[in-house]
Length: 207
Image (tube, rainbow, N blue to C red; front, side, top):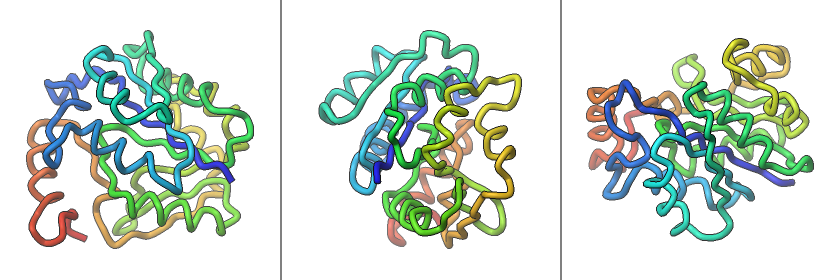
């Protein structure tokens, strides 16, 4: 099996007021943290899609090693669907499953590992993490859905539309940590999340 991850890091970060990939996170930048969590097994291939301020983010990816593929979305102002299309196009057709995560959705490696492990044995097309009955990220999609990911667009709600189209074949995987819901959009959310994520009680957000 070949597990791939697409890390979307090309947005303008207008609500945050600062480039999200370059935000401080655990003593490093957010992009460095995400790369560290995603580049290890069970993920076999990692594609990072850049856009806004790509020239400033790219050096962090180069330091990670040659096994991480970086692509630049020149149309990033069109929205995340354009970056997802580009990331999906960079993956080979024989990819077994695809994990899709935004750079503003930091996830510990153990969340990624459990998600992949359960998906491998579930027989479902899509596995979505949940906390307190709320769906979170990242979704993990069967490789057979790559053609659909390569065609997503903002007008039809992008990734959400793909998941809704296959609603009958979605496996919801409950987690005991609210980390699967974390989404950094505004400065207040970022400050609060950083304080809880790296709290002394184990370095994880409250479960």
